Image 1 (cartoon, one colour):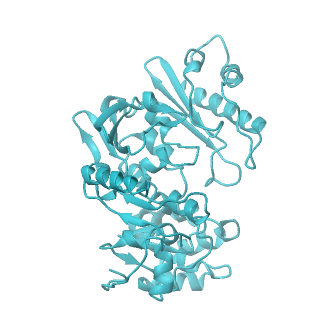
Image 2 (cartoon, each protein chain N blue to C red):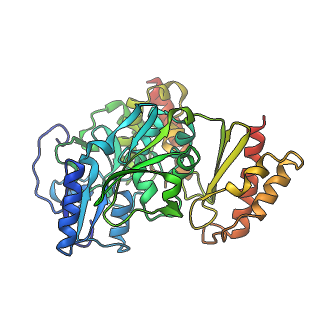
Length: 145
Length: 276
């Protein structure tokens, strides 16, 4: 299941989930950046858990649910990113939104403590040195919205 | 995208996995066992490893089990590190696991992958070695159990074709007093320059370290020194560091001198914490 729809695609074992999502299925929300599991721009939800699509073989996800940023309908979160400037150049934002969506869903206590920064610190990490303040404010806003 | 082709096999049980391994090897297609894939995919993409076939072991029921059974915590080799963190059966293991890589990677990174991968750090070995873990291995000769310590010499000494099914820790050993420290160079998410774990067993303290040399190392030689009250904690740390038997690692992340300094710091802090 991809974003709630049953999709069938033929793939080689050497093709990563990221490659298949972007190049075979046209879902360009997950971004191709480091392809090494460092940056998190390709973050998707696999069976509900945030993972890096560049480090998963597409053949592995047969029968599992995959959700990309295109399938996330959390408008409050997206609005909060826009209003609070939760971006730098914006290229990686889809990874942030996907991850933040899952964190708020799986760790609702974060909304109370605004400890989202603690969790995202252990997540897509390349942007944090300049983005921490913005994300903290964004998380706070979302928590109170 | 991995720049070479290979075949993918997902057996449903141990027998099928071993048979697949055997058949592929006979046909000159030596496979690799695959679970989380984080290391295999990134290394393959960079051309550091190649393989004609992978055997995905996540379909084998024994490798996915996590729970207490007959007085032991049993952990399948494909259990992810985040799963270990969330379940928190064993706090020392949780504390070590939650500092490996980042949150999204840990949703894929498995215990077996951390122990058997190519990266030298193998952080999860520290608590498993210190808590008297045994391992269940499947191989051409059948399924057998062995103490982790006897299987460990810088890495797990698995024979060709052998597959790590699960690990078990005696329930009575799961939550001893412990102190864990991990030092990295740039950010919290990085390879460890020095990562130590000290646990208290009765009156004794046992320890292990990784990141300091080219493989994880048990600090068995230091056991009497840890509790030598004739020395201050700093002096004990100094002496243990001086006696460390392996060459200290030196690379772009940190010099040998800096690593040794962090090791001493971690030991002194750990002793302080354990003697509080």
